[in-house]
Image (cartoon, rainbow, N blue to C red; front, top):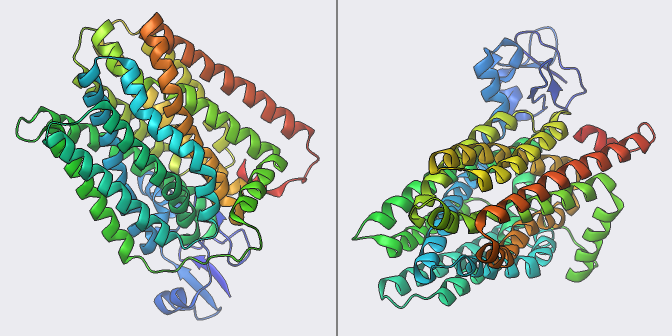
Length: 479
């Protein structure tokens, strides 16, 4: 059976494969009983017609962009998982604001803010590979629900400690550690499940839409945190209780999803799976470069979040709570970038755009250290969000195409280690900032990001040029 849109735009690939039009947009050409029943075969030929909405060649530019950008949300199960993820992201980014502000107000030091993040980083660094291995062998719905419950309890306890006025920096760090343990298992399981729920040609788009949810939540979270921290009757305790409530809602979405994911059988132990995952990355040069460069970029680049409260208070004569406006500007930039590149997540241009976004991000971190005023810093934070949102969106998409499905949970857990290392390095960078100043520390971090990006771009080019033609179909498909 052949499939074609009613406009006559004929598929250029075989049945069951996606068709790419001249602009690189993808629309599904999938055989199935449901499509036949819905659209019906033509008179002369057993062809199921796809309506114009499925074919970019007959759509206005804006509609074609929307079809390409949000195509994976047409899958109802993915849409439900995406909604739960969106609510969880809001709670997570609220916690970054509230934890940093409360820690700085309790202690007045950058190192205390770094110490709170250090707890989460240690947990994720130690348990991240284990979480990835379990994501490839345990029922993902069960893993996600257990982790969401643990995070809900942690937020509720922190809210109670603030409410009773017995909160201390060490309690914030312990709560951060518990949340880090849960994220070590939740993150890989959720990303791997997303990839399983959609068709293969939509994997990159599904991962990109996860990043869209992340960046959209980074807009809502600072606004909610600002309102709650500034409200006398609510304050930090109200913020923590709202985070717990958001995770309860996320659990509701997860519960509604069916136990549809399959658990592959394996003769290896968990640690054997971890070793096989690391070996797979080691044997795949372009994947190895992608993972290592991503970890280094996040590790040094995103440590700026721990330095912003000190930069505001010590250099720009602002209160620590002014960080919320900066994070809001950063999130708007990230959302614009992720929406802009989501439709290109499955295209051959993804790697080139990825490198450009990394450079923009590194230069913006340098700009933070040079910002002469709070207003200029807001603009720089927008640019930082644009670059950071763009390269994070494309990283997950490229990884999804470069990695064999049976290794996806373990590989994605290695990319999650980037944020663990960022939380860990925030502590020594906090001490460095207390010693030489926030501006100099930011200049150094941004320079490292730019150097890493250029170095790994050149190494990737060398690997590509040295590879025989047709040697790696997966790499060619990934761009």
